[in-house]
Each structure stands twice: as C-alpha cells, then as structure tokens.
Image (tube, rainbow, N blue to C red; front, side, top):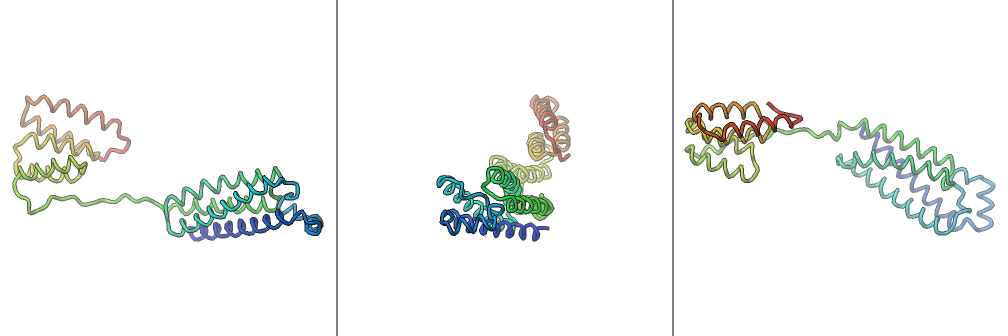
Amino acid sequence: MLRSAIFVTIIQFALAVIEIVTFASIAYEGRNPIIAYIISTLNLGGFFGDYLSWSQTWTQALLWIAGIRIAVFLTLTVGLAARFTPAYYAAIGFMSFDILWAALRWVYKFLGPFSAIVDVIADIVGLAFVFASDRDFAINDERMLCQPDPRIKGGAELNRRARLYRIEGKWALAVAYWRAAIGQMPNRPEFYKSVAIGYAQIGYYQRALNALAEAHRQSPGDVEVPRIKELIEDKKKNDPRPRG
C-alpha cells in the first residue's frame, strides 16, 4: 500500500505542475486577444477556471500557493518513500486540507470543475492508500536488556552505581543494579526501598509493592515505607498502562 500511496502523491505532484504551468501561461498571456479567443472557444475555463476575470493581485497570490502545493507534494513523496513517520501524518493532514482547497477554488472560479474533481479524487485515493500503509510507519516498542557490569563486586558498590543511574534518570539500569546489590547484601532494607521506587518508575507496581513488603518485614518501624507505598499506589491508579 505504501508504494500505491507514493504513486498517487507523484500523480498529485504532476497535476500540480501542469496546473501551475497552464495557470501561469494563461495568467500572463491570457489577456492577449488571440489567447482569450482560444480559451473561450475551447472552454478552458471549465478545466482551469475563469482566469481572465481575476485581478493581478489574485493571480500572484494563487501562483505562490500553487508553487507551495508543488513543494509540499514533492516533500511528501520523498518522506513517504523514506518511511519518515511525520510524513505519514503530514500527508493525511495536507491531503484533507487540499480537498477543501480544491472545493474553495471551484466555488470562486479559481479552478474549473473538471480539474477540481480530478484533484479531489486524487486526494481521496491518496488518503485511502496512506491510511492503508499505516503498518509501514508503525512504531514498535523495543526492549533493551539492562544488566549490571559483572566486573563490579560488592553490594555497596552496586548500590552506589544504582544511585548514579537513578540521578541520570536511567531507572531500568538502576533497578538492575539494586537487584544485584540485594543479591550480595539481602539484609539491607534501604536497598528494597530503593528498588521499589525504581520499579514504580518503570511501571512495575506489584514488584515495587513486593519489595516494600520485604523492607517492612526487615524494618517494621521504618516510617518511610507506608508513605512510599501510598505514593506507589497513587501512581499505579493514574497509570493507564501499568506493566505489573
């Protein structure tokens, strides 16, 4: 579907180029009696709008807008081909807007009905293919293995490293080091409190509560444990995607 979406944007780019070339030619030469006669005889207004009735100000403005359309369609073509995720959303937004822009130009005779219908059909087909190619732009969650450096020995040093990672905001690594520290020194309730906070930061609330329960078992009089537990439970309630 992505190739089809790219193909349609190429067609839209080509249509925009044809439109601006024809428009510029008629806009600057259309008041020539011969050109005016040809436009009238061939009824080109039905294709490209009633350009002869426009003021010079509108002519310049619409030329600039037509140039912007060409640049946008070219950018979208390149972005979709590169599977650039923002290009996916930009294509949806711009093609939706382009449908309204074609209808507006038709109403005010800035575009003939034939060209307006072709532009709208191209936008609708393009939107359908872009929506269908969403899997090509899917954002996949990646899991990164976090484990402590096996060369580091001793619970105290592992705890120190965990605290450093906590300061850096690397909570998953901090949890890995605190778990290793607990393995070296299992009777340190402060390690359990720290790993509980770390688990809560990465969304593993039940593991956090289990670690707090062990901290409370080892140090029943610790007044921080109930307060930490309350904070973790509040965070869990407000998390739409808890991990466990």
